[in-house]
Each structure stands twice: as structure tokens, then as C-alpha cells.
Length: 428
Ligand SMILES: NC(=O)c1ccc[n+]([C@@H]2O[C@H](COP(=O)([O-])OP(=O)(O)OC[C@H]3O[C@@H](n4cnc5c(N)ncnc54)[C@H](O)[C@@H]3O)[C@@H](O)[C@H]2O)c1
Image (cartoon, rainbow, N blue to C red):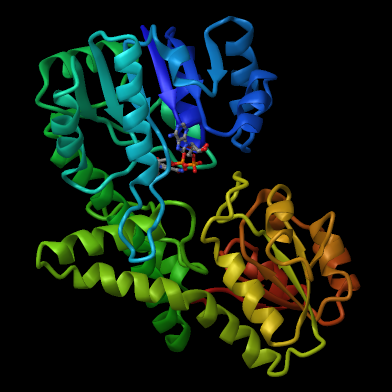
């Protein structure tokens, strides 16, 4: 099939590459000239394992191309809308990029009218797909479906190729059958439903995962007070098949481009309908305070941080991505700077993006370099290279051997035996 993907960010680029790998002829469209120029040369503007190699291969096979002009998508049977829906000032989803993409689709229809399926992959408030369908119906032969995306940054391509489920939200038979055909070769459970249900499935999934994380983070505070070990508690909970082991890790809180904005957008949507989602509201509150709670553990050991050198290991919101949107590291760096600490940070990929926000921080070339002369080291993102360290030489190079493990990923017993003062999250 001939497919156009509007918006070539994390979701759009991954969608474009994975559909090309599935044998479809794909054109990716973005507003940003430099991004398109880079993509055409086979360079990925984002870091995702395996994505650049697949991009190069699909370009080479002639299955994929990129453009800044919607008019170049004239031959497309299917148009995927993958533009951003960031948080607006009032917490609702900012739909201005989506509106612009829809008006691009309308102008394409004017230039080259024909039957097309428009697939909304961006995460949008319930009712958006129906509204767009009624707006576009007047203009022509367009068939609208909601097909929310569930990929995880850090394993985006793999998730797109082997999705946990494919949700096709539409009552339009043409849209449903075209999408079924498009995803024919992908083995995953299907949910065929209404556009509104599909939209709510996406928000509800993210809200639930965010709530699980906050539940464990709040429980970790109790675990700290009780002297119990939250990692063992989580393991014991996760073996219950009704609970499952995923998303039970206590840490410094969730971040990224989805959970923070999607939880507030869902709260706003509920409020507009006179419904209170109090559990989700509390989950956000716990998340907002979790990095600060973590830093209180550091303050207990080093009450005056002024002039102290602190190593911060990991800056991206999670490992294997360069995305720093709403990363807990940003709150941690801000608080450390406010307290007068000298910060040396390390991240294998995300340092340049963080440097633009915190130019005063020193950016090290390795975790070991960041730890040199440090009064304490903090693990904020559990990149492999920040977890597997030569502890003997780290200990020898630190000013004082204080470790604060914000991801419960360092080997606590081994480190305590080696003479470090080790504090995890909820494992005193
Ligand atoms: N990032 C994720 O992990 C993830 C996962 C699932 C769903 N989502 C959802 O998918 C959507 C996209 O997220 P993202 O992280 O890929 O965003 P992003 O910010 O990485 O990418 C959006 C891209 O759209 C482009 N764009 C904006 N308006 C355009 C227009 N009119 N025409 C062409 N290009 C345009 C931007 O230049 C940018 O490159 C959001 O709604 C998000 O909530 C994201």
C-alpha cells in the first residue's frame, strides 16, 4: 500500500520505518527542513536502538522517502497523523499541530481528490476523531480512524514491529478494512471498536501505568520508614498473576513525553465532564514530589550541599533514549544547583540536550569521570554503562563514598560490603 506519515518524530519515524519494513511504500512528511534533509541522508534525528540501520536499509531499497510537502503524498492511500499533542498551558492537549495536519490533508484532497484513509495515531482527547471525521466529511471521500500508538521509547522499532495490540477505532468500513489489510502481516491481538473507545484506551493505559509507578513510589516511602526492602516486596507482588511484574519499580518518578501530559489531559477531560479522577490526581502529586523525596535522602547525609561535588549518572527520562522531556533528572539538577552543589553529570546520549538547559553543570565523558572527587553519586537513569561500574576505582576516586541509587539498580549488598554508604529508594 502507499502510505504517508505526517510528523516524523518518535512515533512518526518509527511508524514510517516499520511500515516500509512491512512492504509498504512510505513517504514521511515533516515541517522541519533540517530533519527531512537529515532523514533523506539516512541519519535519524532521534536515538532509538536499531532505527537508523532500518532507516538506511529502507531508503536503500526505495521503500521510504521523506519530504516537507504534503503535495508529494498525492499517491498515498493512507495518511497517518503522528504530530505532537503537547500539554497546553491549562493542562489540556494542545491540538494545534493536529489541526494544521488535518488542514494539510484537506489541501491535498483539493489538489488530488480521491478516496483516502486518515489514521490518527497521535494521542488525542476522546471525541477528537469524531469531530475531525465530521469536519472532513464535507470535504470529500475521506475515511477516518483512530489507531493509537503504544510503543515505548527505547524499544520503539521493536514495539512497532511486534505491538502488544492493534486498536482500530472506527465505524467506517472502508477505514477498518484498509487498516486490517495494512496490518495483515503483523501478529498482534486486534481490538476493533469506536474512535472514542480507542482514544480512551490510550489515555487509560498511560494513566494506569503512571498510577502503578506512583503507587510503588509512595509505598517505597513507607518501606523506607519501616526498614523493609521495596524491591523484594515488588517481586513478591509481581508473582501474583493478577498483578504481574511490570511497572512495579520504585524510583525517582516517571517522566517522558507521554505520562506527564497524558495524565493531566485525562484529568482535564474528566473535569470537563464533571467527573473527578482523584486516584490519578494523587498519582501525579506523588510523582511531582518523588525526585524531591529522593534528594531528602541525600540531605540526610549531606545537610549542607553548598560547594559539595555531586555526580549525577543518567539524564534521559529512561535508558536507551535521548528524550529528556519531563525527565526527573531536570528537577534533580535544578534542586542541586539551588542548594549550591557543584554537579558533574553523565549521560551516554542526552548530555547535549540537557546542557542547553543547564549550561553550568559539568558534563563528564564517563560515569567514572563524573564520580571523580564527588562527595556523593546519584543514579538517576539506569543506563547499562551507569549501572555496571568498576566500583573499586570509583570508591578510590570519590571524596566520600556515598551512593544514592534512584533506580534500585546498583548491587546494594556488594556495595555496602565494599564500604560504600548505599541508599536506594525504599530499601533502607
Ligand atoms: N513518544 C512516544 O513514546 C509516544 C508513544 C505513543 C504515543 N505518542 C503520541 O504520538 C504523538 C507524537 O509523539 P512524538 O513523541 O512522536 O512527537 P514528536 O514531538 O517527537 O514528533 C512530532 C513531529 O511532528 C512534526 N509536525 C508537527 N506538525 C506538523 C505538521 N503539520 N506537518 C508535518 N509535521 C508536523 C514535528 O516537527 C515533529 O517532528 C503524540 O500525540 C504522542 O502523545 C508518543
